[in-house]
Image (cartoon, rainbow, N blue to C red):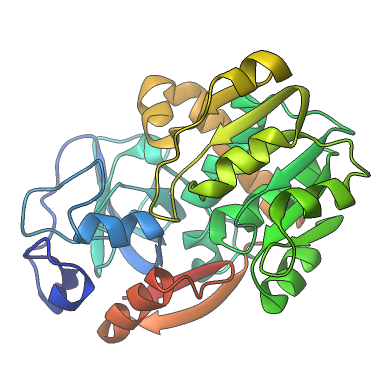
Length: 323
């Protein structure tokens, strides 16, 4: 089968499209004909050897996909021909992928494969973060850093679905338009205004209850300083490339919490809860409450360009490869 192949941990330019062995049917697994696979910043880090997971070389990158079930081995409740989307860690940038049934969910007919491939990680992470980890409730104020990215827009939409007032922090006018369209009540352009000043203006100086932070770097401490009493900072990722060091006296004097969000491990440790979350997400997508934003779609032969677009932080919403 044709696939995007990583043979060396030397980054995007070392990737190539070529033939890769078909996945072996294993009892308890599902083989899926992949129609779309989304590109995540984690995929970029993985092919550079900088992600916490380092697959044995050679491997196929890509952690989330949508497609049609081709065959099953000893799995009930799933049939060949079913439309599904799911998460597999790596192995999605190919014509055919293998997944475990607990990591896939049915994809409604009205949802495109491109949109479906954009659901599992971004919406799974954001729902787990805001509901399970932060306990975000109606009328609280949510600040989303990096709001123009895939997990950022997902967090904006989920925050609104939960009844929160949502502030999106972005770095360009184009991203501001997209985040506003996703439902944000206010926008902070930190390319124009210092972040803390922007947050203060958007909250009339009151600060925020929850910070959703997939960015890291200097923005983390600035956002933490802008939380209210009993505020929660969600540590989602470090797209800036910098893991911040936070003075813990901020948590002491403000009574706030720094909360880790590791959706991948959550799937392993609490599979039943993860499956329940996924069902809520799919239901909301089917009803139009959540609307995945796919900015660009690339054929497999142009997958390197898709990775570069994400690595250069040009992406608004999601970028998808169609094997």
